[in-house]
Length: 498
Ligand code: FRU
Image (cartoon, rainbow, N blue to C red; front, side):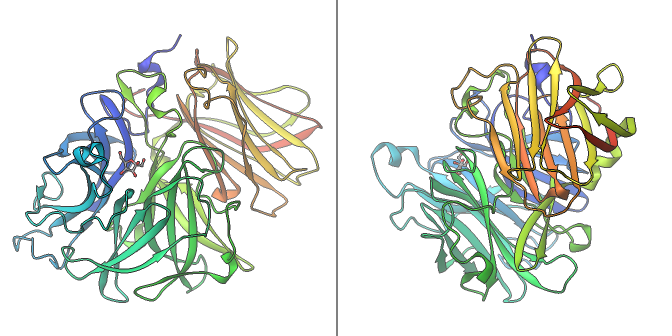
């Protein structure tokens, strides 16, 4: 049977020890990507929250740093964001370096226990050494609680058009928009979301970014909004809304008007990509919108079968906004930096799939740490199935049913599943959002995770699994014969598996 060490990903971020959930406060400065994260350094389940910290030159190879923010008498340090205050609008700079301002939620456990409603408030901290250490601002909290129980996860964006800072905050069943000139005094500008989109649970961890529509000069604002439960395949999930912003109000685009509980605007349809947000301060020419999510789901996050560490982040992804006819879609692709870790390759121009057909085996190429891509031309009214299997009885399946225009991941027999009833009980599905006659598939595997990018990231599915033995075979089958083309499997090599 596999252990904690075998399950630990090689090229996805995991905490060295103990519990992790949401990514927090990501920013880029002077060649370094910073990632902070919800962390309980003393236990392997959720507990009093700290901000852990890690740095990287490429978002793939991470180095864990000392803890950045610790709980104090005002409460635990919940999720939030960070920005580089280049113009020292906050006045918290020392005149030498740009201060980094982090904004987070204080969650006061005493208030919660006492049954109060106002135990979540917003606070800031600043760093004068490029994010190494933070000092909590003496005027905290900077936003008091107006009497809303779930009032958290501030995400700051720079709005150059209106020369202001914008902050989005999740408040129960809506997003609240605040504006500021100095990151210390915040004014409530508007609210969005009641009766719009999915509301199967509390809204959490928003993000608000201005995006260029690919291939045009058009710009739109995108509100990314996680919720738990109520995700597309149950539990935690992340939806998005496309619209316009006038400096105060976010208005949903005409094409999305009437979007209710059931919709197809999800950043990821799999069960394990939650609370993701984008990096601040990324130069536009370097991609602009880089995203990372927590690769788990509150349905079972505390029970997944690892002991010494718990949870990984998704691969960093570049987000783009596309428009086809009148429909906007946010598409994702793994960051280009992953390319440089590609090692040995297995390639084949084409394979004809009849009944169960082997594509590759682990003697030929390391399947457990790999990027796999292939295409299917001229899709037909039929089913396309793929699977990874171990020597024992572990099998992880994914595929596409062109009759239903539906993708799926089936981890019900993928190994250890019975630690929680919501882990292996259902097959996750996702709609195909492309009309193209050819299907492109890219899969990233890293010991315990699969990230599937269909149609260049128009439909994405991310899920975790815990095989009792490492996968040996990658195979395909269908209800009719078909051809797979341009098969490319690259091993991903890092210091961890060299
Ligand atoms: C989302 C979340 C946030 C909160 C944090 C606490 O996963 O519930 O809303 O700030 O986790 O750890």
